[in-house]
Length: 562
Figure 1: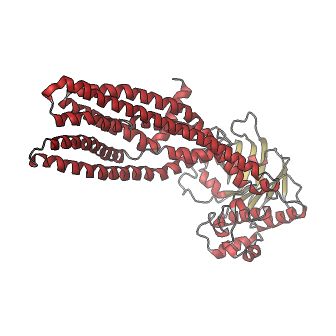
Figure 2: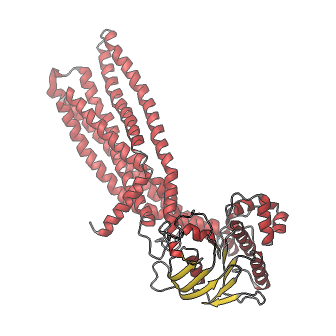
Figure 3: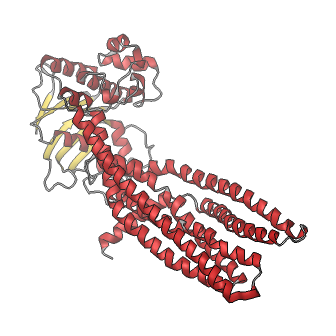
């Protein structure tokens, strides 16, 4: 096995391990499942024994134990199956919440720049469909395989006690038809699994495009094309799913044939060879038992198909979350902390918030050259620095380095301490980024502000809105309960920037980085917005304004061109 393949396998195994419930809960679920399946086999065999024995009209007392046994096994089959499903599904669904959280946490450090795909549909499919698929490892792979192995072996052993020849015939039919069914199931599943994830991703892409670009599509009369794309993706996914269902049907039919062959072979071969060695009731029980044994064994091909699907999903998730992080990305918790700050609390603010850069260079993950290099400046509390440059000059890249999303080379000191030696939490609690395209949640204005400081009162929220010039606007729309719409659909670009700055003010960052706050705002409105945003920041805070447009005169700021 190559190093790359070994790394992929290790990453996949880590993903699957995260999806498994605790071992004790797994063992309890397997126990209940085994008992339920044993009831299935025992019920069929004992029922046939009782029917044939009753035909001989023995004293009723000779049949009492069998009558009670049939009732007990019938009740036990249903009751134990219910307990088994309740236990296993509860264990798996309990594990799903931390599994999603761990997957999300593993994705976070890879943004920006370390994900192998930019397709939102593929990421959404991995985070939703593939994570859900991992539940099958405990439910439909490991549990059924262990349960089937135990019940089939015990059943064959029980038949061997009655008739060794019957057990041999049953084992041979199980081996032949079982191998054929497993080959058919895994071969077909291998073809479909390669297509299923891509089909899901295409459908997710089409749906996201339709629902997040509705206004643009409507403006250009392309809604019909978007609906057609969704329909095509749906038909492709349905075709693959029908193929999987048909393969499962063929596998079931093959096992049913195997069960019938085993029953006929026992009836024709064993009955003639055994003569009077086996009583009629026992012979009837042995003849009918293959139907129950094959029913239990049918879980094996289904489990192997599910295992391929689980491993395919785990491979895709591992490809997104388990790969080695590029050196350009900052790993949270990796900063050791210098001796001068190591004993302080993590959330404590740095007293001196002077920023000093000397020869700083920053590179995007996977890039062969620096996006920005040779940057030097000093930004003291209360000062404003404007960083200008053409699009692509590296201004936003510099902002990501200042907030410790990307690593840097050179010297970047905060309060006289090299930032690479400070805990990331300290840096991000000191330097706040108001990004170029702030994300607004599809909820009311209050919740869009409170995640910056969840303890803020309504009056504090309104005060922050007042400082950014939005209080009257908010009150005219119903106050803090005003809806924002999906991705801020109900507010303008300038209002979005003001809401984002209100968040920054609520978070009370000593240093504020404004990344292209006037993007999408034209002419005099951009100048007004810029004046208002800079005026809203308290005078004792540092401001680093990133823009590619001309800055109006009279702001009293220092400029740095990239």
